[in-house]
Structure formats: structure tokens, C-alpha cells
Length: 417
Image (cartoon, rainbow, N blue to C red; front, top):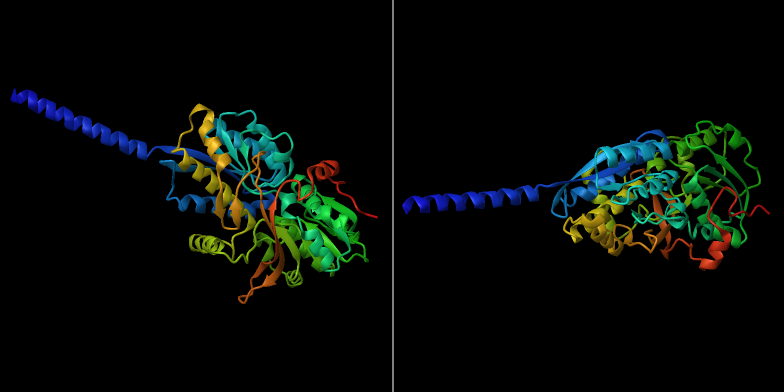
């Protein structure tokens, strides 16, 4: 009898130990999430800051979401669609990630959206790519973008440029989807209210020599509209300075971003006062933004004076990814149905305003009109001069008017005469 009791007691202790071990195993279960950014090519510096933004969002959750330990599987692109898809395919098909965050650049986003359609059981969340067509044309039901896109980022900048007296401009932009969107967001209101873009110079991504473009800039324009990013922007600014260029500029969202703004060169001083627009700004004066900046600086001593646009966008998209995992307690069963429903309902106060998505799973939010300003420490930043709230993908236009205009391309919109 005593022996039976001892055996029973040992069995109970053993069972309790197994339950405890199972609980610990559950707590330590790892969920792999793919993280794609452009760490090569013209957007290498933005790509590095993208990773900082995603890492910060995960660190703020102590590396956990949905009761699981989160492991980022980081893969790299070079801002080309083929490389973006190949890197995404590796993360999904070889590394077996269940959720994928990225990519960084516009045409990459369109390509990854199309790849997402071949992987219906994986959920894809954007990184920072901002081409309109990613979510506005034939969207993938499993691709989510919590940031607004490139055209939305430029709404209101056309009116601001006209108010500064820039009635006649010349455009220099990279020749792919994201700049097409940016140019449309700027020109839609600029042209409608009397502005003229006398000509457009479309350059390949990764252009190093801008001599022929600079030679064609008309003498009688009031300003240049420059929609270049990363090393492309730095190369143009440096060569324009060397050529003696002195026209004021209207910048795209990534043209005077932190990844470009503090480059070294005489032309840098002439950037003061440059008007731009985007989904965030260095001088936002809210507790949420100040905390974001403080956390970024505390965690990344090798970062920029203020988080770049790319760090911000990867941060909010990663936070949305992790918050939805918490909402469903890590449940990715049934084709991730509950998780995707949680993503659709995601709505939180981010560093630069409310983060939410529309029926096409695309962000709706505030656009900040800014001008480049010098801080007391000598660094440059974008100061908010105006905000335009709740911008949707129809750019504040009635849907019929937006459809009549069509998506931004090399030739849409046009107001040369």
C-alpha cells in the first residue's frame, strides 16, 4: 500500500514537471518573421535605418508577441523587383517564415505584392514601399500596408509651392513606380491651381552622372522639383553644386529625409527652406513622437540625428504586425484568418498620428508639409509648416475625378502649357 502511494506520488510529481516543461516550451516557442530591406544599391543607408525601426518595435515588446519569442529572419535587396522577390522567396520557402515584413522601395512592393498571391497562407506586411499600384491596382488579399503611400505623402505640397512663388518648375525624378506616385501627388493640385511643370527628366535608379540632366535645366524656371532618394539624391545635389546651380528646390519625401539631409557639401546650406512633404516630420511636437525619437537615439548610437522616414515606416508596420499577434494570442491557424482579421482592425496612435488601414489594406493618415531648417547643433531637420489630415488614396479628390486622372505615370499628370 505504501509502495503504491509512493509510485502515485512520483507519478504526480512527474506529471506536474511535464506540465511545467510544456508550459515553458510554449512560452519559449519561436515564431520566425521575415524582414526584407534594401541593404545594397542606392538605398543601402535607408535600408539600414529600416532595420533599426523594425528592431525598435520588437525591442519595445521585449522580443515577444502573441506569447511567442519573435525571431527576425533578415534578408536583403538592392531596390530591384527581381532581387526583392528572390530574397522574399528564400525567407518564405526555405526559411519557412509565416509572416513577411518588407520591402523598402516602390517597384519592389508591386513585385512582392504579386508574389504574395502565390503564397495565400503567408501574411505579408509592407516595409516602406510607397508605389500607389501596390494596393490600388489588383491588390493581394494577404498584403497589408499600414503606411500611406507616395502620392498621399505629397498632397498639399503643390499649393505650398505656389504660395512660395514657384509657378514654373522643372522635374528631376527616378524612373519607377514610387516617384510616379510622388509626382502625381504633387502635380494633381499644383497643376489644377495654375502651376506649370515645363518638362520632366526621368533617370534610372542608381544614376551616378547627372551632367546631361543638369545641362537641360531651363534658366527661366522658378524652382526644381527633385524626387530622388539615397545616393541618387546625394549625387545630384553634389553635381548640381559643382555646376553652379542655384535654383531653389521642392523635394520629394525621401529627397530631404535624414538619410540625405546631412550629407557633406556646400550645396547642403542651400537646402535650407526646401519644401517637402511626407507622413512624418522631424519636428512633430507630440509625446508619441518625442518618445519614439528618444528610444531611437538610446538604442542606435550609429543612427541619424532623428529617425529617418524609413525607420519610422518600418517601425509602424512592424508594430502593427506584432500588435495583431498579441490580439490573437499568436494564433496563425486556419490560413491565418483570425490574424488577418486582427490586422484589418488594427488602429493605434503611432509616433506621427493614428495608424489604420482602408478596405484595400492601405494606410490612411496625415501628411506633413515641411521646410528644411537648421538646428542649434548644426544638424538639418524638416520643420512642420502645415498638416493635411486623413489623406486617402484618392488624394482628397472625389473618386470619379481621381479615376478620370488615372494613376501616376511618366506622363500623368501633365501641365506643361
